[in-house]
Every structure is written in structure tokens, then in C-alpha cells.
Amino acid sequence: MAVVVAAVVLVSALYFLGFLGGGHVQIYVHDAPCNGCTHVWVTFTAVSVHESDIKGSGWINLNVSGSTFDLQALNGSAAAKLLGLDALGAGHYQQIRVEVSRVVVDLTSGVQLVATVDGPSAAFSGQFTVSTGGTTTLNIDIDLASSLHLTPAGATFTPVIGSVAVSGG
Image 1 (spheres, rainbow, N blue to C red):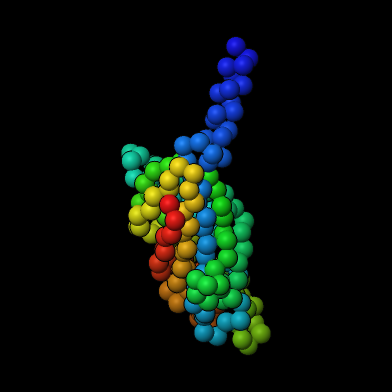
Image 2 (cartoon, rainbow, N blue to C red):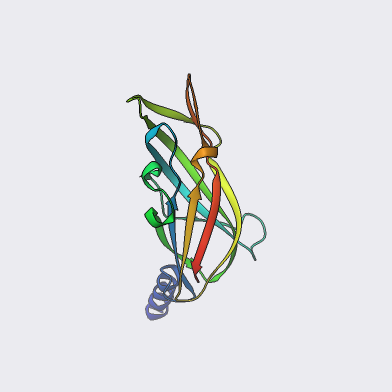
């Protein structure tokens, strides 16, 4: 009996880690620069994907909690930084959602602002497939021009996904 339980635990662990029945997903983030900013530090608390064949919630959270990036420095996909890498079951996915908890903006004037995060999540409808043993790369463009709003009273940030480029599978 103990051998059967150990085998079930091992197979479950291998499946979860993507060695059996699944693959991996890499998530990169980048954007074009913000006019008047020297740095735009964005803290991501979650990235979720939605599997096509699942009814109901179907959202799967990926391991990216607490990742902070200077999006001002990530101009274009060539400068993209890895936000997360996680095992994901083989299948077809149809949506991506990012959640942001904190945004700090350094202006060219030397002033630093903590932006109010208004509507902390953004979703993007886009198709991608994860194959058994494969790696799918999602390159997420956060549109700073649409996400960050500077006013004389401060700054607000509502994440907007400009595009998602998918490669691999």
C-alpha cells in the first residue's frame, strides 16, 4: 500500500512540475517608455491564464508574486524581463490576466510619486497552447501610455495590456 501511495505522490509531483502531461510557460514583460519619466517601477502580484476547456472559473494562477520591474527600462520585446516561469498542464488557453499592487514613478524633474493603482488587473484575450514537454513563451506588452496617468495632483495606474506575443508551444 505504501508503494502505491508513494507512486501516486511521485506521478502527481512530476505532473505538477510539468514532466508528465504538461509543459512550461515563461512570462516576459516589457513596454515603450513613458514621456517625462525616468523610472516606472511596477509590482506584479499575479498572472493568471484561463484554460479554454474549463467551464466556470478556469483561471490558473502562475507563480509571479511580488515581482517588481522598471517598465521604463524595458523598451520593446528585446529588453523584456522574465516575470515568471511555471509548470502548466498541456492544453489550449484563451486569456491572460495580470494584477498589479504598487507603482512608483520617478519623474525627470526628480520628483517620485507613488501612483494610485486603480483597477489592479487587466485581461487580454489571446490564444496559446502548451504542449507536453514544451515551453510556451508569453511576451506581455504593458501599454504605459494607456496605463499611467500623470496629473498635477499625482499619478494613477490602471494596467492595460497592449499586446501578447506567443512563441513555442
